[in-house]
Image (cartoon, rainbow, N blue to C red; front, side, top):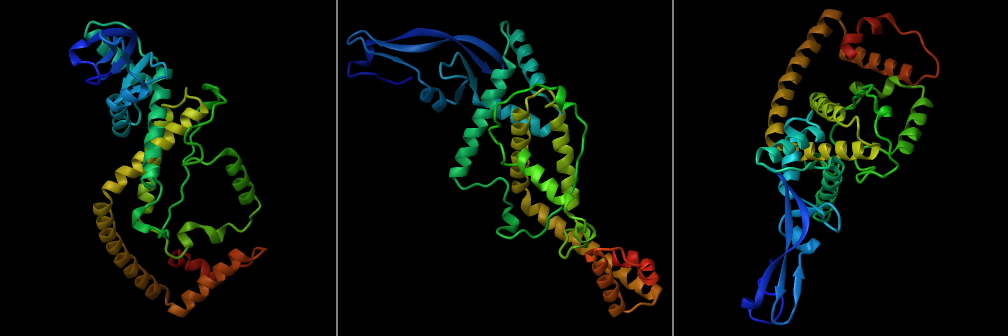
Length: 323
């Protein structure tokens, strides 16, 4: 509260209870009254506004702030989701309801209000990061040019069609998960392309050896989160997955130096091992470096060709050498 609201003496100020609000903290729900100030000398009054709540680390659910959340509860929910991706919003709120009863109070916490306020709070944080030029989906280790990429699929048959239906737009639409219309155009482009062999990631120059490991970890992380979004709307599911992906990247950025050092050492050992295997196979099959390059060229021509061509027996026998 402000120390003064007018030019009168501070002794003339009186604190009065205002409207009743629900305040949600990590100890559950409190039914409290908003404080107000009244000057007995000049009759001036003061009531808390949204800016006053935000500066005190509170987040109002609406402009009328009938429900107020401490920002600490949002931080805690986000950290718990990172540690335990399978934790749902409903389970977290049930824990808070039990805390309310534990300390002798009553009242439930609205799941819809909490989720909406949480996403709005995260959206404001995202805008602040954007103003500060922080990009959650740009890797600082390979900017401005991407050094390597790993492409993988993770298909789960969740019963999302039986979940909540909503026409609302996601707050983070298009930031991480592509829009439906963009995916449709991309799939049509893939189906119109018949030469798939050449574009396999493992056959490209500069293919990353250890990237697939992190892709598997990230897919497993997002899959566990997706399970908890079954009863969310499509917009809510998009926002939750996008938010957790951004937090995954932030966690990755903090550990990037150590991670790259370990990956470099692992890659050097793997490269030495593969070079020894290559020399062993070349000696076993009695082939020269020029023959090997010719076989690689034959495979590329076959991949570019409109019709299937007969592969030389030598190329078939040495396929494991090429790939």
